[in-house]
Image (cartoon, rainbow, N blue to C red; front, top):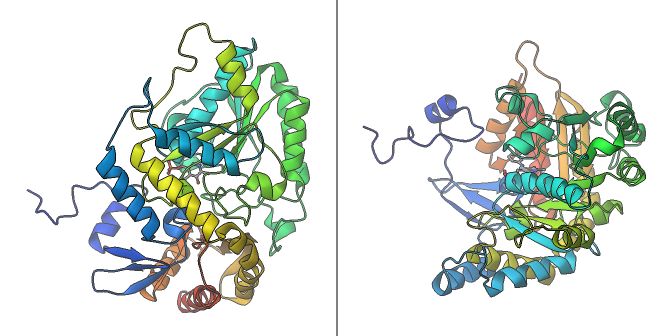
Length: 437
Ligand code: PXG
């Protein structure tokens, strides 16, 4: 029988359960830029939780909004019934979303947003009489969550290889990491716009009349921080337009100021047809995701429906009152504290701090954009990923939370970070790397 404090019952996600439970690291509280361990030690959050607490932790206006909402309307379905916060939040998102990309479908996570976006793309093609356009194109090393649609278009081998044939009719673009040509580039890497031309090859192979949509992360996060080469996203947009293919941006990590603009679409000046969100949409205080669609997609699906319900899709907690309240309070905070602008202002300092690690031990590449950083390590011979894992543990013990994936250290601090805390992250990582073999 497990005791109340036993670690056995909780099957932890994306975690080496045996190793963790033999040597657990626990967090009991968070405030501002810091997590706190059970013994009261502060740990500087260099990752915004998991790319999600963009406004920092325990923010009062968000906490109070959730408390108020819980006391007022704990739950109401949005299936054929409405509550004001869901409409208000969708409208508020529309104010910061790219022009005409403001028809919002609510989900509960990034994974649900990815699957929802793919389904909407297919529904749109069918609604306009092009049901033959069914193929979905993802990208190698892409991450779109862990549901079947997302792993089908995703490109992280370990997330896919166990789960059978997945969704049919999927193909992949090549990823854009090119360390040989782009190592240590600052910001958008100069080489690799031609990676987008692989879409032209896929069109030649499958014909555009069979392709519904392309989905990419504008900046690939989970796989280890891969930046789009200069001009790449624009070329992808142009090719999608040329071949009448929808472009979906998965903005689950790039949304809400991470790059110093509301969305990556704004930062790169490239407009997708569908844009997915989650994480920082509520500062992660309540789970939520959303999919923004162009008015054309929404109008086409509504106008061509052959039943009263136009889209047979939704979740019990789509537009949950607590999530909407948290989301509205979060958008207010981003606006009132000018956090997107703050991220833009801090980005050059962040870039310098990241690249100051160039001569640190084991480092073979550094990548940065907005308030995102990636430091790639040379894998330890015969023991890939070990070095990064040890660096993670060293940093945690030294009071800084970083994220590791493979042999890459990933950074995405809350947008409220101070310059001295940026220095603290760089210094801690430098000494961690020095102390591991
Ligand atoms: N799309 C993207 C681009 C993501 O980064 C998801 C979808 C899925 O979101 P949910 O809410 O279903 O987890 C993500 C999630 C990491 C890391 O270490 C990143 C994510 C999740 C877990 C770890 O970088 N991103």
